[in-house]
Image 1: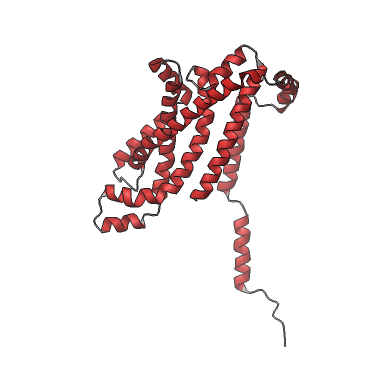
Image 2 (image 1 turned 135 degrees about the horizontal axis):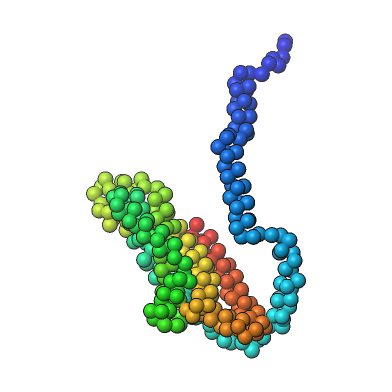
Amino acid sequence: MTLDTEPKPEAVESTADLAALRRPSWQTAAGVVIVLIVLLWAAGATEFSVAALLDGIPNIADFVGRMFPPDVAILPTAIALMGETLAIAVIGTAVGVLFAIPWALLAARSVFDQAWLHHAARGSINLTRAIPELMWALLFVSAVGLGPLAGTLAIIIGSAAGMARLFADIFETTDMRAWEAAAASGASRAQRISWVLLPQSTPTVASYTLLMLDGNVRAASLLGIVGAGGIGMELTQQLRLFEYGSVLTIVLVVLVVVVTLDRVASHLRKKLT
């Protein structure tokens, strides 16, 4: 009885294929080089320097040290304004979703296959997203005056465009077999959207909406810098007055609300998926 120690041709071929897969292609090598060039350019353009950061650590420590102890006298005001900020984020997200869903349906190729309609919807979404929310806030402050309404309108526009982009991708990647079956049975486009597409997409849409709400709370906290209501207005005022203890109190209130909202949103997303 002899043992066959010669490798089988299939095994040799398989090993060669694996070795070929492990060798990077020229496209991969070129991609790595391009990424490195972009990173070096970005570091130069932003004057990124670890040495400068290390030299600035004492100044950071001095700035943080001035914030202690926190000034609890401003706590009631901070809580009230944080409630206003949360209200801006909630109504802005809710109304933004109402605008985003039909906008996204028009932008989804799987729903409307007319090229001109798809490109027009995508173009309008990208154009709106290109304008920062602070710019929208400045626009609405000039239109309706200082206060939370300007911030709410800015969040609505920013949320609608951002979620429309996400929702359009969700609609395009949804399993369309049920959609096609409904079409074959004679269902209209509106019926297929209402009975097939939206019910299938609801868990994912709701999950992304919660993520957007979390981001909008932080965004609404910053819009007050330009007078668009919320806790940002008070934060800017206290910074101008060099009341660093009050600044720390405001930051802690924002931190507590953001962390709590993140935990609640994470729990709800787990329930939805």
